[in-house]
Image 1: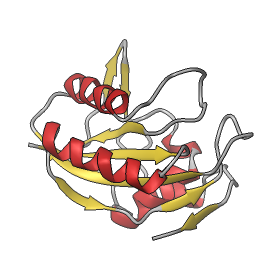
Image 2: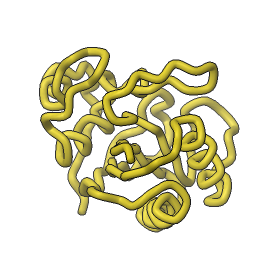
Image 3: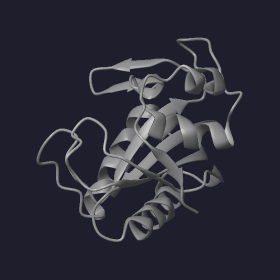
Length: 160
């Protein structure tokens, strides 16, 4: 069994409900949730002229391979109404595979650790809440250290 971290976000409709539904489906199809951060209200990153997001990071335990996890989370996103119209556009749900234990995965469809973790405060803040000492396997730095040096200055507010 591998302990992995997933980032979840929603900025359309009932954001909290979409995240709750995603976690329920993740637990059914990928593995049990071991920890979950609080919910955070965050500004849109990348394409900034859209509604705010609610973001959360969860840790789950799974025996699935990274590519199977990717296929599973893409299926969950489709089930919850995600339509990919434009890069970084609005979405009912977004699920990213952030870390697969301490492994480095380089496949044509998947890079793990997620390549933008160190640049995204909306990922680092909730991740810091549940895994402040986790060491990024490429940068060899803790999540706390990455958060301190994060260049992203967009607001991240604790909600629930």
